Amino acid sequence: MKKIPIFLIISISVCYSQWYELNHDGIVRSYLLSYPDNPTGPCPLIINMHGYTSNGWAQQYSSQMDEYAHPQNIAVVYPQGMENNQGIPSWNVGTFWDGNSYNDVGFIDVLIDSIAANYNIDLDRIYACGMSNGGYMAYELACELSHKIAAFGSVTGNFMLNDNQECDVVREIPILHAHGTLDYIVPYDYSFDGSLYIDESTAYWRAHNDLTYESIETIPDINTTDNSYVEKFTYYNDSSATEFVHFRVYGGGHQWFGSIIADWVISQLGNNNHDININEELVNFFLNYKLSDFIVTDMSTASNVEIPNGYILYQNYPNPFNPATTIAYNIPANATVNITIYDMIGRRIKTLIKNEQATGYRTVVWDGCNDAGLPVSPGLYLYTIKAGNYVQTKKMVLLK
Image 1 (tube, rainbow, N blue to C red):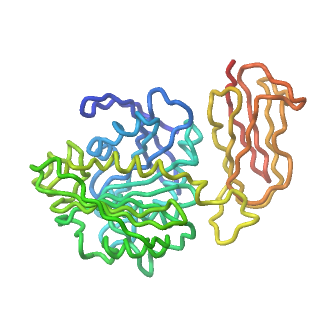
Image 2: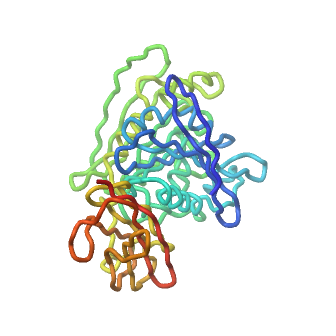
Image 3: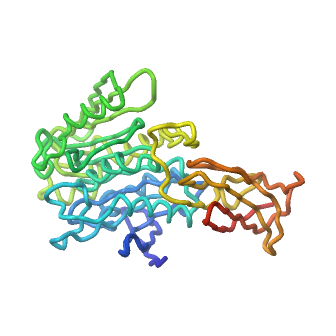
């Protein structure tokens, strides 16, 4: 995996970010990962996708999400869309204008696995959001990748749903959508491309999630010079925590609301709003949800649930650890699974799993003890999974 370190200065904060490349479908894809300097345990991960014509670096710079994510131990990844048939970076969301035939859902799927294999990521707290075309893509992931991503957000991007772009998701989907009423690029109250504009999208997801109640909150107009104000619409029910939240920005344009950088492009994209900061709203919304709130980990007792598309052994978390750590792995088909801990000279320390397992997203905990139930010495250990023809080994560190 190729990586290129860069340092970015955003507003008054300094963060370390790194570009990575991976191969998907025989094509080199890239993403910019921004990881907290001193993480405290496994990090939730937010996938933040750029708009049409933009790129991962520009989305990081203009959204300023790192400033809100890093203090809460959250990593943010900014994937790069492929150039379409006009040489413009875009995401394949089924519109007539994106001009993109790449498997972007598959890319994001592999991207998650790649990051989790190399960083200490909380696989129960992965989220996706985006700006404009990236917001469309967040909706696409809600339909296609909800077995890995817990909650979703769209800023000025619509939900594409038609005969060629279906949504067969089974579980409840929490969504936050922010949109300006004077957005002339992705209009607020009508659709130019066959997508569902906000009222239609709201109706769809209210029905899907069975959200029977509505609350409306007028956000205090603390900035009276930005020519806009905000109402927050929350749709919910009594039986679950799932919500569809919509920030209607009256007078707002095609903006990442609250970003200082967005003020620089008001003449091109319309009014920004500073009564809310959409980064703060997205982060707070996302942290209400975990993937385990919505999916079962044992597919043998479930029906109509998406299954893993391949074997994967993830990096344990936390790592380093003391006294216990969790190992996550995916099983795409029923198989005899063996997960074993070894020391660095190859001696078997502990057999964690040795049985037939059904398809599912699974975890196992190692408590730092050997097969005799005695604590082992601090140091470097290996853990290996064997399932079918799949064999994979990773390292972990047990602290004093």
